[in-house]
Image (tube, rainbow, N blue to C red; front, side, top):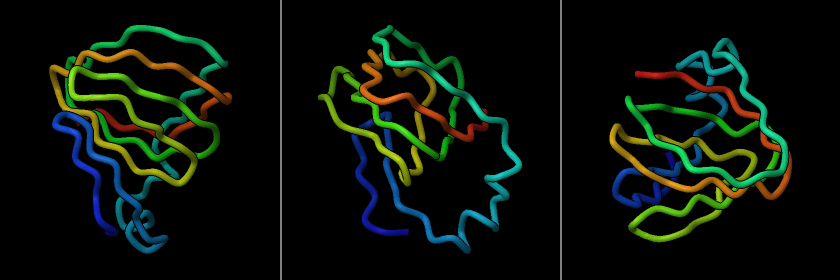
Length: 95
């Protein structure tokens, strides 16, 4: 793990290939979304690995960019706005 960025209810990390293999991320379902902007609320924790694309996520704590190669944890109770800049594809898992 390399220097996670912790934005309160959002944690962005870079995991090694070995770490990704250990959690079997490639076996998680894939979610895709076209360029768009929408509100979202997390009813449970979610972990995801961004395969392709780019999104700006705005929360009460700030706005930040998530891009291909990022491993992100969204915590339960997070309210945010997703602004998908480039078609996003991610592996995801609800905890």
